[in-house]
Picture (spheres, rainbow, N blue to C red):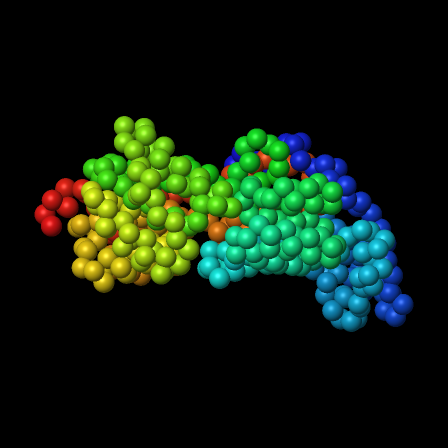
Amino acid sequence: MKIGDINENKFSLQSFAVPTSGTFMNQRIKLADVARLAGVSSATVSRSLNYPNLLKRDTFKKIQDAIATLGYVPDSAGRALASRRTQTVGLVVPTLDHAIFSRFTQTMQTTLAESGYQLLIASHEYNPTLELNGARALIERGVDALVLVGLEHSQALNELLAQSGIPMLATWALDRSGKSLSVGFDNQAASVLAARHLLDLGHREFGVISGFLHHNDRARARVEGVRKALRDAGLKLPAAGIIEQPFTYAGGRDGLRALVALSPRPTAVICGNDLLAIGALIECQAIGLAVPQEISLIGFDNHELASHFAPGLTTINVPAAELGRVSASTIMQLLAGVMINAPVELPIELVVRGSTGPVAMISKR
């Protein structure tokens, strides 16, 4: 399913055990005072606080302006108790140390805030125990929905999610089985796109610098995409040509050194993200290996630095900000009772810059 096709009845709020009604009041400035100033009914004010995404934007703004003018403070605890809603969404991400996850998270927060929701965040550094603990903490704090990265999680976390009954959205990957609601892109297809670009340039000796594959289904899908493209071309990616490193510049440098020590040496290297690719590019410059004359490099993410190196980094553009926006919008629709089809697939594209070139150039070294 593509963006904008959220109209089928695959997932709905009724799929999860989440009550959806309730009222509240404040002992000082009254809800009725806000309604009178905003020129709307008390029920509309209540709806703006419990289900802000159901209101027209101008109506919601009038109510928010009235609340600000009067200094009205809703009884959040009482409202949460009555409605079983806390107006919060939980997000568990691998890390906030990478720009692409930060961009995704910021856009989610901005989009949710427009509907009166706040984002609570936990990170786990690809550690399944920390992921479980973070998810449990967010659920215990009463989040209305939970957003996770990837499809693969520990059995303990899967059991926790089933017991909690709250809506859960998987991101950065696509669940084509339909077992869970997901918003993301096809990681394997993205790597196929990268590998075919290099094959079309004449490359036949490949290497991959990947993040750690354990507990990371996205990284494994990207490696499998390279394997698939090579299989389709009658080639094979050797086991020694897959180097696992942390998603850092240093990891890229270490991975590149390991690959150039192989015989035959790869003429093309596909990296699991742009941090690894930029690290590999820096290492090539440090050891005097010309890019792309002697080796071609491709990244993954389209980091803002990718276009500022010389040569610029060829990479897969991942719409991280759009992913955050669509993920937040999907959660809002789900909480509003809208029927949603799954998965919601975002487009990816190959951005060709100067770090890739024809294999014929290598014969001139």
